[in-house]
Length: 341
Image 1 (cartoon, rainbow, N blue to C red):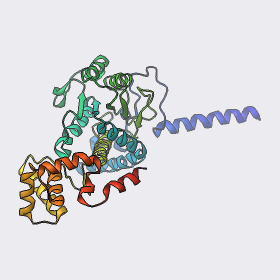
Image 2: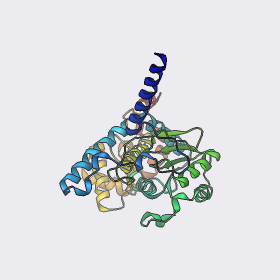
Image 3: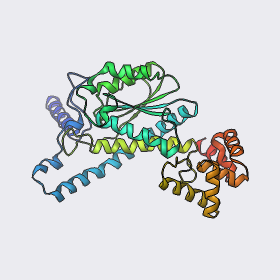
């Protein structure tokens, strides 16, 4: 009887294991842990098995159904995303930098987020940077073998002089990209804080201590095309990390972009609208304040509230640091402190 029960339990165990593997909850043991193609992102998706025979509308419907899984997968990682936001905020506040590291789509997404921080939050391009395997030309052209170059990943970290004040966020949909893993390993050795974003279940980490953000979006509708669901999940996560850190740094007032860099007529109009809305003043007054403030909305707002010059407003903001919103009479500083405690 005990022998029969044992056989039955083993069979049940094998069945559950197979079920878990099919659902992406676990991966088969790999012969080569550093680089293999058993990644969930490389598997076939049953939902799109006959997509090559589908109509245009059917293709769109399949993709849309699969995309709906992305936000839910990211939702499971919100606690880890929050940790990443706080780590980046603390680093930037203390004079450190944020580096995104990736290859292919992952590298391009990191570069996109880094570039957008400048005009959106008036952040120096030195504060938020991106490193992509193969260099900048890899932004518009695939560089053969670049993602497999571990030495280049290490060299990039050394060249950027990444150290203890900095944060390095590695992005690898499959979790196995040698360039990214090597860069994270070197950054960790140099004392940088590390974040790893991957869509592969149960990844091995290239550092001993750090943050793992692991949205499991499942197989792509075209096997291995991680610019799809994995890319979308990555973009959502990067949006939250950079935007969240900038909000904590005081670069957003209410939900307004008060540190926008007005490099176009559209953005100048946006700055005028922001000042008009917050101060409750006529458009002409907002325009005049912005001209005196070199079109920096934050400076113009403090000038309007404190009835002072641009120079005095800059001095007051520098003195208050992240609590500068107190100058607008809203009590934001105390509120923020209580929430974070």
